[in-house]
Every structure is written in structure tokens, then in C-alpha cells.
Image (cartoon, helix red, strand yellow):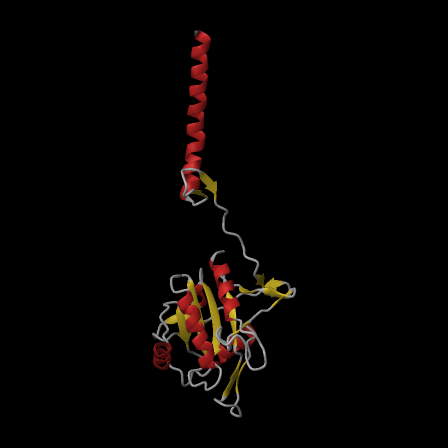
Length: 246
């Protein structure tokens, strides 16, 4: 009889220790989304933590390329800096509102991307005008309304031309220049740069090498341009999603 009582006491003690030690840990893991309840019952399963995606970090001289510090004025007259994009995944472009060639195509594609990620408050776009003498905040505001910019994290920015050109050519290696001999008076890259939540330049790897930039001129609907170059908006969307999940 005594042996049986001791057995009960031993079992009760084990249960008590389990409750004291393990239950708080289970509750903590559920709170931190490390464990989830199965839809078919009450079984708990481990939910893997978010991991770094397979997108490459662009490196220069062995160092990961990060967005340089910048500070310009947006379409609402507010000062916007790189710090306003911290914690966000965003796309960078250089454009100008009177561009008669590639800019309308680029921004139509960015509108489509904006609408794809309309439910993500940590997605944005940074558009820098290369013709700040003409593209004032008021002009950029009208341009944004014309194209349907609704994302509060999409800032169309103007400011000192020298600083903008330095940001484009040195900060991102996205070619930008004033050239009165070309249509529109300016030359610039039609590519987009993709930035992660920590401000690093990222891209997918193709044939063993990072593509670095994404072609912003060809739409998904077009599939390819007249020379057979395939569109890259679809892969840009896929890679934005990867970075949002990091």
C-alpha cells in the first residue's frame, strides 16, 4: 500500500515539474509564432523561423553594397531620407516627368507592382527625378496622381541635381546624364534596383551570377521587347515577395 502511494506521489511530482518547466516554454513559443495549431485538431507543430532568401547581396570590393545616405523632398513637400525606408523592401528608379520615351513604361510597370503589394505596409518605391529644375514637388504630385500612385511609401523626390546624379551614377551605378542631343534632353537607365529591409542592394542569381538590376521597361503582358529581351517584372515581383518574407 505504501509502495503504491509512493508511486502516485512520484508521478504527481513528475507532472508538477513538467508543468513548471515546459508549459511556460510552450506558451512562449506559441506567442512568438514558433508553434502553430493544426487545422485538423489540437496537435502543435514547429513553424520554421524566417530565413534569408536565396537572393544575392551585391558586393563591391568584398563589401555588401548598401544604399548611400540621401535626403530629398517628396511630392508632398516633405523631407525624405534613406532612414524613412528602414525596415521596408523597396524599388529604386531614376526618371523625369517630361520623359517622352522609357519613363512612362517604367512607371506603368511600377504601378502594377504597387498594386500587387498593396496590402504590405513595408513595401515602397523611391523615385528620383533627374530634372529637378522642372520637377518641383507640385509637378511630382500631379505626376503621381496621373499615374495612380497610392502607396504611402512611394516617394517621388526632387532636390539638388548634383546630389541626385551622384546618387544615381556612384551610389547605384544607374547611368544618368543631361544630354541636349537626345529626345527629352536627358539619358538614364531603364533599370530598377531592389533594396532589402536593411538597406542592402539585392538581386537573383542567373547562370551563376547576380543580375544586379531588373529591366523596368518591358511589361509582363508584352513578354519580350522587339529584340527578344524577356520582361523582368514578373521575377522582380517574385523577388520582392522573397525579401518581404525574410
